[in-house]
Image (cartoon, rainbow, N blue to C red):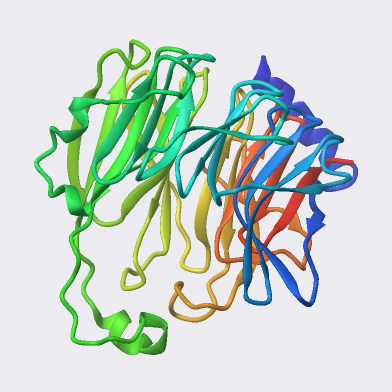
Length: 366
């Protein structure tokens, strides 16, 4: 029924204005910039972005909040730079910072530190008490008191990898019982050059791509037990989105020396099958979004030249697909650019995208 709804919605759109991504916020000041690390909309009205402001030679950790769906935004100073966000409802949320885990009960307008969790990158909560954190080195933690105390999950150390080069980077739950954790082990490569790849593009392009040991942990009992697996593959699985209707999208990102910047795979969690859904040499996908019963979206950056790790930001390009097979580019405000982009959604009718350059856009269907 939901798929039929989306088909009807797309047909109606075809007869009217095309959906487009409109710029809602951009911190465009001569003496100040905002680096955005993550964005969440726990409801259609309330949104929170975390990162830091750079003003001349000073850096100010900050969150950016809205209470009216992104029409107006205001900065809130924080003591530590936010790396990622997770919200359980409109008011209650957690922020992982460079120094630990913080909590808000006011939709981001005030924060209090819960724990100093060194190495944490991301958290995910099943309810207001039970949650998990992932990070480095080779670490997964669990909490049963809302984030005040954390205990290591021993299964995180089972893969036979060097902890110094192993990190768990992503955690997602499709429902209260089924979830996945992603990680990778990437030993450093020997090099005789002290210059970054973008200063020696010919050398970087000729470098052979090395396989990465990708780590996946799955749970079907709300995190009481985890089943680990490891696969040697080119690239790293950096994102996964799961829905209640048993579909999923997984993002694989590659290094500069690989022919493709990224690949997206569609998943069927019922059968466990997956197949490649998208890849293009001129689209470096950095995030995926999948609406329950509806379409999927890809946030990508148009590479500037042969290498993707150049300091010059590229244009934001967003694609949409209902069947997760045929992807169509959408209209995006021409000013939107960055090195990476992320999605946030508060239901099928309220979807946002943001770049690390501090630009926030909303999908308009009228």
